Structure formats: structure tokens, C-alpha cells
Amino acid sequence: MNGFVRKTLIVATALFAVYALVIPRVLPKWNTWQSQQQSNTILAQRYLYDDVKYETLNISSTLSNRLDRDTLPATIANLGFGGLGITDGLHIVERRGYAPPVVAIEMNVAFKQPDKSFHTSVLTPVFYWMRKYVAVTRDEYQPIGVLKGWASARSEAKKKAFGKAPLAVAEHDAIFDKMLDLQREQRGKSPDAAALDEVMKEVKRLADALENKGTRIVLFEMPIHPDLAGMAEPVAIRATFSKYFPQDRYRWITSPDARGFNTTDGLHLDEESAARYTAYLRDVLRDGK
View 1: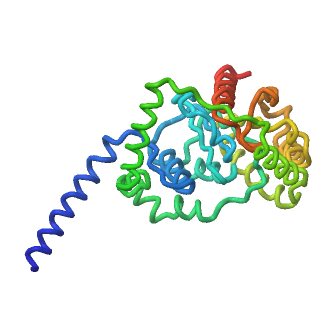
View 2: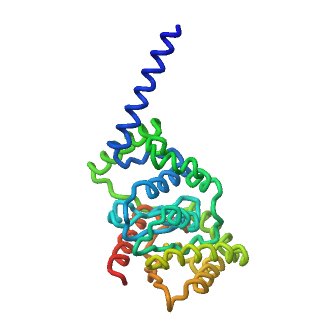
């Protein structure tokens, strides 16, 4: 019996060693995440450990998470974390220590406090250093996730082979109207001024640290439904950004006409609109307009 257990342990150890040595070296950048939280973790870990010196970083919220990564050039990294705020992305940039030439900060969701569970999972020192030097311990290399990523990659390949175009969302149905009414109710209230100011002080501290290393800070807004753009919450956020990042000192990217874009709920762009806005943002960042 002891011999059987010993052989089993030896085989298991050998298989793990092979997996640990081979998978991180050969696995494509598949979508191996199994939840939004894990998607955020994998995105952060890739930025922290892949050691790519991007020319531009897009620091953003769940809205910019919809940007089409296939449309963005390899020189731009989109740190758009689903359900999180811009301070979470800036803390990841601070931890890595690399200051890119340009950092573009999305302004739409500026009131979110840093997410403690996200910071714990990604930045706790013992896990940070273990994942840095033992790649197989990173979330994207979990076996179940790898299988899921393989299946997703095959599915996406079939869609491209058939030339399936991205689907737009009809903005004039009963479900959408209910969601838009809910957004009107939520965006019609100004965020707590003290809480917003607290977040913005941290954003400014992190941005100043990047500027001191030579980074150029750029501000932009993701398009949202025209009925929401002038409501109390976005107006208050723009005013607070103007206080900390005045337009005579910082570049604010001109927003295209929001009436040319569709959303799924008033806030998040649908697939077709996200692809078009991604191309717009890419060109503006490239041309320096």
C-alpha cells in the first residue's frame, strides 16, 4: 500500500512539474477566467508580470471593459476592470512601477472606492511574489480555466470563420426602457461630495507620481445614453475632475456625439458601438488630437 501511495505521489509530482514548466510557456492568451472577479485578477496579473512596456495605459472602469481589445494595438493596455473603479487600476500601475508615456483615465465612474478584496487577491506580498516567480500559480493557468479558454477559443474561431458581425442592441424595447429609467433615477442624484473628493485626492496622488516620472495624463469619457449625460451624477464628476485636472493643464479627449452609439442599459456600449468607439479612441490617442 505504501508503495502504491509513493508511486502515486511521484507521478502526481511529475505531472505537476511538467504542467508548471510547459503551460505558462506555450499557452496562448486565452480567456481562461470563470467569473468577473477572476477576469479582473488575471488582467491585473498579466500587466504586473508580463513585463511589456506599453506606450499607453487605459485606466478605466467596467464601462471601458467593453472596449474591443482586438482593435487596440499591442502598444495600448486596457486596464478596464469590471465592477471596479479607476483607483484600482492606478494602484496596479503604482505597484509595477513602470511609468508609460501616456496614461488615459476614464472619468465616468470616479466615485468607486478601492476594492479591498481585489487588492488582497492581487497585491498581498506573499502571493504577489509567489506568482511573479512561479508562473503556474497565477489564476490564468488553473486547469479548469485552461480547458474553458480552449473551448472559448475554438468557439470564437468558428464565429470568425463564418464572418459573424457584432450584434447591435435595439434601444427601444420594454426591457431597455426599464433599465434606462433605473439609470435616470440613479444618475439623477449627485454623488456624496466628500466621498468623491476622497477618491479624487487618491487619483491625483497616483497621477502626480506618474507625471513626476514623465507620464502624460489624458482624460476621457465613455459614451453613455444622451438622456444621462447631463444628469446630476456625471455633471458632478466632470466638475470634480475639472478641479483636480483643469483643462488648461491636462488634455481632455473630445467625446463624440453620444447619439451615434447604442448601449445595452444606458451606460454600457453594445458590441458594435464599443468596436466603433475603440477605433475612435485608438486613433485619437495615436494622433494626439
